[in-house]
Image (cartoon, rainbow, N blue to C red; front, side, top):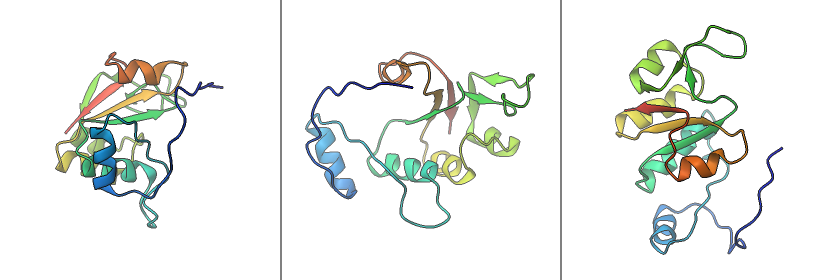
Length: 140
């Protein structure tokens, strides 16, 4: 299990409003988005892409159980090929399941890159935030 040590107290929790999130980011605060959109048929992947676009983020960071995007499920296909980079179109055509099609399409249509990386081992989130090249870059 990953153990996170808090570096600061949570100031407060509030419903998502893009303008407020952008203001907090401009003040140098950390903004964490939790949950989905509250709408049926939309996954948390799609919510992540939507929120990233709303706050004009530079990239969507997708932490998951695999260390990148593969040609097939690496847990069931031992010969699955890991990609260093792949386009959203390629991922959609290949039926890649690491994110849903709506999230890939939103990012593609709005020129938003995605980095898919493993949540494990401990420290990977820090590595990705500080620019270390891990995982797969999905380009628009």
